[in-house]
Each structure stands twice: as C-alpha cells, then as structure tokens.
Image 1 (cartoon, one colour):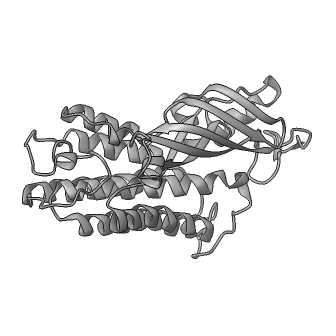
Image 2: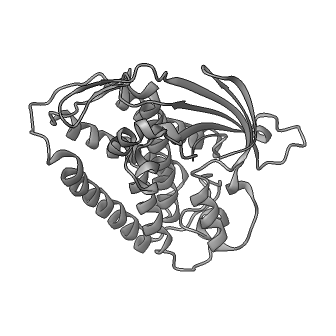
Length: 324
C-alpha cells in the first residue's frame, strides 16, 4: 500500500508545532523538520517537545490504522495470518514505493526526535525503528486480510529504506544518498480510461497515491559528498530514476469487466523506464529563515524538475528538456 498521504499528514502536523525558539544547532532548531543531517554538537533537551513529538506520532499512528481499517480492510473478510508473494506485481513499482515511504518516515521521525533534543545517535536509531515499526504494523494487518497477505518483499523494502537513513546518519551524519519521488500524469487512451479510473482513481490526489504509471522514484546522490575535493556545489545531485508504464493489472493487462466478462489487453505492452537526471538537495541550501527551511525539507521529499535522459523497453533513448 502506498502511504504518501500519511507522510504529508505528519509533515503538516509537525510544521504547526514550531514554537519559534532559537537553538544551538540551527539546522534542526530553526525548524522542526529541517534537514535530515544530524549536526554534531550539543543539543539541548526539551521535555515539552518530546511530549509533542510522541503525541503527534501516536496520534498519526492511531488515525492511520483506523483510516486503513475503514478504507482498505473493512470490505474484505479477516482470515488467519498468511503470507502473499507479490514481488512480480506492478513491475516492482509498489516495492520502490515502500522503500521511499520507509526512508522518508524514518527521516521525518529522526528529525522530529532530534528537534526534541534526544541526541544524534538516539534520534537516528529511533527514526529508523519508527519507519520499520510503522510499516511492519501495516504488513501485519495485510497478513490477516483475505484480499492481501504479509508480503516479505514489502517488508524487505521497508527495512532497506529505514536502514538507508539510519546507517548514513550514524556513519556520516548526513544523507549522501536519498530516495525521492516525482509524478507526471500519464494520458490514458479512451479505450482504457475506465480501467485506469477503477484502478487508480479519477482525481489528482488519488493518482498521486495509486497511479504507478505516473510515478517515478529516484536514487539521488550528492556529488560533493562523493567527490569532496571537487568544486561541485554541495547542493548539486545526480539522480537515477525508475518507472514503468501501461500497467493495467498487477501482473498482466487482463481483468474482469463489470459484467464478469474477461478482458484481455495483452496487446498493450507494459514496459520499464530508466532515467538519468540532475537534482537539488534543498536541505543544503543555506538560509536563516526558519519557515523556508521547513518548506525546503518538505519539498525535499520529491525530486526537483530537471533535464533527463530516459531509456525504456519501448522507445529506447529519449531526451527531456525538463522532466517532472
């Protein structure tokens, strides 16, 4: 399941908790969700902030599971706990979505606990544990649903995303490698428009969450960190992207129509897409404005539009002057 909505909810909740106090570590103390980089140094403890962070995360957890129970699970019978192998579905786009979600939840939680003053290492570890625990609980709910099941593939990506965040914080005190997201709506032809609406929704918010054909995930690498002796600006990044197109079902373009009739659109070929592009690490852009720092951190969830080279199984190489 794709949880971008819940990440944005946590971001908004955290944004409005700011109390305007100055701090010793400006990257975190000027903004609750500032950069994901845990700057070395003494961070003052804030017991009140700990309660705010704990209450915020607990509230979002409870609200998420209540919402999921009504939106996802209530329409399907409960079963005994079981596993479900869905690795071959959606050209693994859903798996990369789990990687992105777990990474960003860990980054966000780590930043919030750092703001609360618990220290660099503890914040990094708790952030990673939070990302894994949050996603694991949802996988367990899946395991008791007849519609889904506990996916080991999803769990592997959840652990990988959280570990990517925590390892970098503990080893380097910065995020040299980040997982980002971008969205460019795919234009469905009229003969498959109804199918896309049924699968992915009709509105932009629905498609942002569900439409794998319109999503691209990116591994963004900070070149200044990789080549510290170079004159490359410390905010400039290189990104490798992955996406897929024309998926009208999990494993194949076949489904059952509204009258129970079988529909076979195997003539529409599914294909993978690979990208190379530039990106900007907004957290590395220096500013003393606390609100702007928070805005930068929020938008660092997504990749900045930039020129890109694509290679796909359908059209080969293609150059985009600007790719979203």
